Image (cartoon, rainbow, N blue to C red; front, side):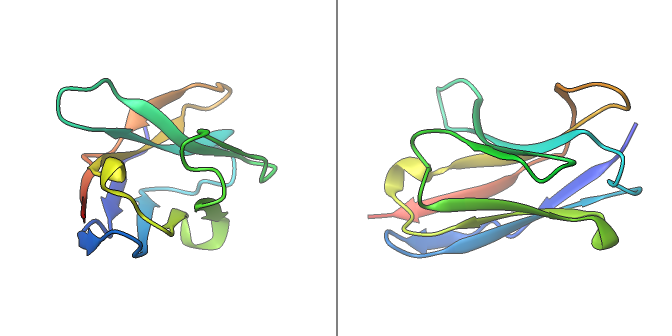
Length: 118
C-alpha cells in the first residue's frame, strides 16, 4: 500500500492562492487514479478533484475554474493549485490513491489544513 504525505496547507485570505502537494512513497506511474478530497468541520468528506494515469481530470462543481489538479510521475507527486479561494474552501484536504488495478481511492494521507479567512 502506498504511503501519501500532504503538505502546503496554510491560512490565507479570501481571493488568495495555495498549492497543495502529495508525495507518494513509491512510483505513481501505474496508479490509475489519484485525487484530493476535503472535510470541513461537521461535514462529510467530499471529492475536490481527481486525475487518472492518462491525465484525465475531474472536478467538483464548487471548484471548477478555480482549482487545477496535476501529477508529476517523475516526482511521485500530485498537486492541486487552488486560486480565488473562498471561506467555504476551509477544510482538511486529503490526498488519495487507488490500489493497483483499481479505480477507487482507498489509500489516504493524514491531511493538511487549509483555512481561508474572509
